[in-house]
Length: 262
Image (cartoon, rainbow, N blue to C red):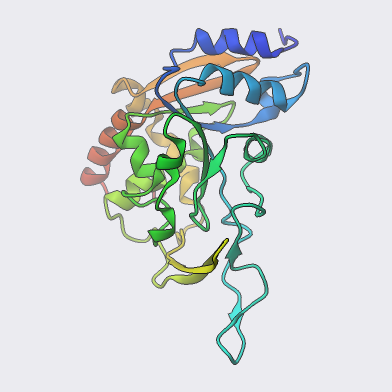
């Protein structure tokens, strides 16, 4: 039976979830799956922020569908704004909750032009630091690699593993061929000191969206103790260990580099 959710009821669900409130939590979300909330999506966000007040809360704030390479004029100046990422203004393309989070006090956003993340809490500024020096969506030395280093948990709140950007990272780190464009695109990051040029290899798979195949390892992750299940509101949730997920999928990819190709 569906229920009417409040910030307090969602907090109770989080307390019973197995999420470490003093650790690092990345959240992918489908707001509508949670069900009716007293104050809408703000209740979900309030509950997550309060629950993780002594840890680090991270949400994707990606812009891969809006920040794209356009063209240059005769003076080699970028034409249009589509290839410029403004961390203060460019909206996230990955959900309602992510854009609400970006407006909250104390939230910082990384400078990755296509796969930025937003973070609040313990060492948030340090976590997002340095993404302007990357040249691929999920490099090992970027924020997605830091999820592994910090033994983070990854919550899929009402959405499946096809939304698992972390697995794009695992494929990158294992040098799986056919996942990135052959050449980088010239993108720019807007800062208070002007534009920073940030060439980026983009996600590319000739067979379509490779992430649609990520759900095929869910059974392997469960058997490896990398996954757990519970509900928050009406939403079915999957909680992954970043370390166990990367190690388990890394082994599978070594055995079969084309694991996610079909």
